[in-house]
Amino acid sequence: MSYARARLLLGMSGVGLIVVSSTLLLLTQYPLSILPTTQEWSKTDLSSLGILLIGLALGLLPLDLLGGYFLPNRWRPNTITGKAFLLAWGRGALVQTALFLMFSLWILLLGRSLGYVGAVLAIVSGGVGLICFQLPIARLVGALRMVKPAESPDSSKLKETQELLPSQGHDLVPIEILRHQDAGFTGGIVGVPGREKIILPADLVTKLTAEELAIVIARRVEALRSGSRLRGLLLSFAWVIIGFTLSILFPGAGYESVSGLAMACLGFTIWTFLGLLLLPTLSRQASYAIDKRILAAGASTDYFQRAMARLDSFQDDEPERSRWVEAIFHPVPSVANRTSVTSAGEVTKMERPIAWHAARMTLFMSWACMGTLVRAVHCNVGRPELWVMLPTD
Image 1 (cartoon, rainbow, N blue to C red):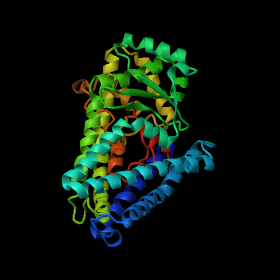
Image 2 (cartoon, helix red, strand yellow):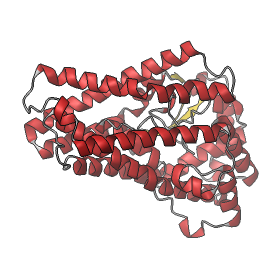
Image 3 (cartoon, one colour):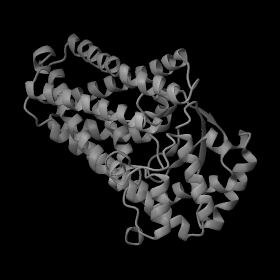
Image 4 (cartoon, one colour):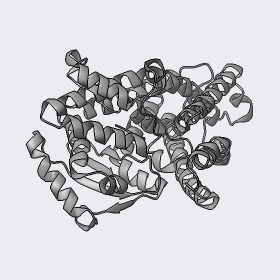
């Protein structure tokens, strides 16, 4: 049993438990019997939502303890102290619960005022807000600190890295560095289309060579330039909106009462689970295609393979996994599979990266619908620094 497999089993167990519980509650319509059904504003709306969301946070605590404290310390001793975990978890859970409460009240407000259209507008505007403020939310939830590239102790390496990029045919994109504690933090791309930023973990800048770091940046620039990040963003946005609009059609579900909203969230949990099964395939396809593109543009195969291996070692350290396990549970392909595909030229018919990071971006977008699975998957359970910016390739 490796650390990666232990995390996978935890994620499968947690997701399975939540989905089964949601299905049973949906079928029995239990929320309708214990939560307010009134469609008019009352004092019980805020209190019942608060109790419900606090209960969700505490209900996920056992999974978080396993994923954020016990498992890391079992395979990587002295990874995190109990006090540090509780402080980080408490901060992240508090911020997420507050945002969930805000989104809940927003849906009720527009739903009660404008009906079905208002409820959908609430989700759309909530999703737009999440995209616009992803970086501030990530910093708030995970206590991530910004480091200006010019003030970084590795500023000379960054300058050298940026000088390597034009030789690979890539344009420069604004870069920001975040200081973090979790070794699995990968950064990513944030911002609205046309005003994106590449986020790099401080440890990554320190530990990778300039050539390896150039590979990481070049891949993210290619995700932007090819439109793959935009398509992934739009797909995740559409997936969440479609899921919510379908969920409020379940018997007993709605957008005008707390109980109806709770029922809609249960239905949305099942929809999110469906996305966990289907969307990783598109994310992996984009990863393979972007790999192929930067290699075709002149990136060194040797540095590419070294960079991917080192990135994997910083995370769950699972360079090899079977194709069927990866097909179901992993939107980021393994090092071995990426090396095999790019070396064999198996992606010649998939040169266009369809939707980069779509699977895990959908989980973050699900915050707008109070998604119960957003921090229960194997890659981020118990790791507040990864709740907003989930690990990417």
